[in-house]
Structure formats: structure tokens, C-alpha cells
Length: 418
Ligand code: AMP
Image (cartoon, rainbow, N blue to C red):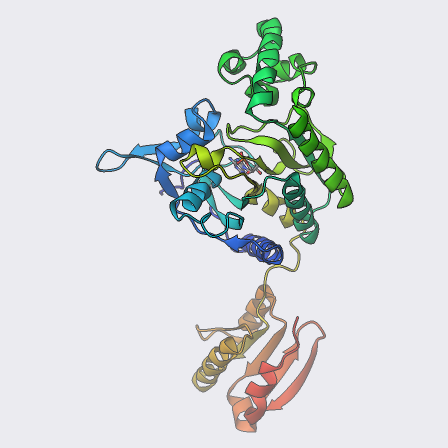
């Protein structure tokens, strides 16, 4: 039997309702905050990701699904959405009329990471991106939206972690200090961090290897290197979070894997997911639009890990799966044809109904109705047709009533909502 690819997975009925629910709540919230949906392709030219995410990142170095197409152009299954949204913003000159644009997008991403619980090779993200506003107020608003999205989904136990990455100027001084620090502890660093020490020292800060974590507890903090403007913006971020009534954790280790971030960076963390504690991550990427060939326009955004959020919401999934309102237990050819007509009319009227197509006994049809969790069962057989009335049983109340044949459809269409 052919199995699916390692690290990929099916989202089956029973779980998919959780995903639909999240999507509905998220898009409702985005709409209320003035975000417009944008749909971008799943593949882009490799160069787009190499240039935006950065050659020295884990993603570009070892996790991208990259292959030549038939003409030899290198293409990549997108490992994240931001680069493609920026590409689209520039390509369609969306800044020309009004540089301020707010987008959201939902879809699959691909990274060839080591699969484990909460980490897949095809996973889904919900992204929001804001272009044209440089103020930390927008970063605070994004965090506010994330926390309230979690609240609306009944996901408690979430807290934003925030840090500032400063601007490239602040980072140059910080990188030098950090490199010097890493030099001193280089004996205990893992192989990756040995490499990062020279090429991308910031990445050593969020290394997960315990010896590296331990060695870096006393590492310098980026916030100590912020220039006046970056400092003021970071203060504004904190002040506005407080204004919005949000608690947060200052996290000097929070650097994120992508090169194009600047100033505000954040993660929404939860205690409920074990090792994969980040439900969402985001931050400012003021330099990216320009770096990809557009005008100098600031931008910020976030990505929610849909799979992880679904796992959290799934813990509360009771009631999300829709069950049939009605099962029509029909006995005999004539009854079955009537049941078939009613079932189709009911579907159009928004009342989900099921029936038996195999001519099974009443007992086995009742069993199936029970298994499906139907709220009502309509019983119709030759005898009922002769009498000109059918029996409707309320399965939760264990009551039943007779309904004249002529009134059946009208009565069924007005079954109480569950
Ligand atoms: P990133 O784009 O790396 O900042 O990730 C943003 C969010 O996407 C993370 O907080 C995770 O919740 C989620 N995420 C990232 N990588 C994976 C993965 N391999 N599997 C599942 N979720 C992921």
C-alpha cells in the first residue's frame, strides 16, 4: 500500500471541523480589524526565499524543498508566506495608491525539518502582514489580535514573549559583542553554533541544545545595544501592550530564524504544547520590501502555526462536529423513494438528513441512526403510508409523534436547531 510522505499528514473529518472553526473565527477577527485576504502561490523562485529569509538560516540551508523545473529554473515550495506576500505587494505596485495595506493569508508551508509531534514537513500557517506603518503601535495591535484570537478559541494559557532586534546599526554593535562572548564559551558550543558564531551569531541565542542554552545564560542582551530611536519604539511597544491590558514577558533570547526582522519581535507561547511551545511568531521586517526591489516601506506581521493552534483547540472540540439532524428509517421501496425525496429537499433547506440505501431492517437502521448521532428519526414503512402518517422520534427526549404525510416536509424543515 502506498503511504503518505513522512512528515506530511491527512486532516480527517472529525479533526477538520476544528480547522474550519479556527478559520472562521480568525477570518472574522481579521475582517473586523480591516485585513484583506490575499492568496499567493505555493511555489516561488528559490531566489525569493534565499534573498529574503537569508542564506545562513536553517530554513534556506537545509530545509527547503527545492528542485529544478523542466527548464532548469530553481523552484521552491514556500517555507513561509511573508516573502511571497512582499513579492506580490511589490509586483502589483500595491504601494502606489496607498502604501498602507493589511493582508492575511492561510495555507500550507513546507520545511524539511525532523518530524515530531507538533512539527511537520507540510504544516499550515495563518499569516497577517501590515505594510506602510513603522510605528510599534501596529506591532502591539498584532499581538492584541493574536491573544484575542486565542481567547475566542478558548485557548487559555498563552502569553506574548517580546524582544527588540533593533535596526541593522544596533545589531552590528551587538553582533560584535555576542561574537566575542561566543568566542569565550566556544569549547562547549554545538557544531551548528560553532558555525553560527562567525556567520550568524544571533542564531546561537535560540539554539535548543541544552549545553548551548546553559552557556548562553549570561550572553549580552540586544536591548542593551538599542539606539535612541529603537529604544523609544521598544518602550512604545511595551506601553501600548499595557494600555491594551496585555501581560507580556521580556525575552532577550527571542531572535527568530529569519534575517529580515528588525525591531519588535514576538512569539505567542503556551505551556500546553510541550516542546513546541510557540503557537505564533512575528515581528517587524522594515528592510525587506526594499531588499526585494520595492520602495523603502516598513512592514510587520505574524505567522500562526495552524497545526499547533488546532491541537490546542482540539482539546476542547466537543460540539464542533456537525451531526445529522434527522435519520429517515424507511422500509419498503415506496417509502425509500419518499425518504430519498425528503432527504434531498431537506439538504437544500439546511437540515442535514441521512437514510439507509440498502434495504436493511428497522433495527439495523435505528442502530445506524444512533451511531451517526441523529437528533431525530423519522420512521416510514408500508403501514405508515397506508395510514397516511409517519412517526417522528426525538432521540434525546425519547418521545415520538405522528405526523400526517402531507405535513411531513414542512414539519421536518422546522426541526429545532441543535
Ligand atoms: P516561523 O515561520 O518559523 O516563525 O513559525 C511560525 C509558527 O509556525 C511557529 O510558531 C509554529 O507554530 C509554526 N511552525 C513552524 N514550523 C512548523 C512545523 N514544521 N510544523 C508545524 N508548525 C510549525
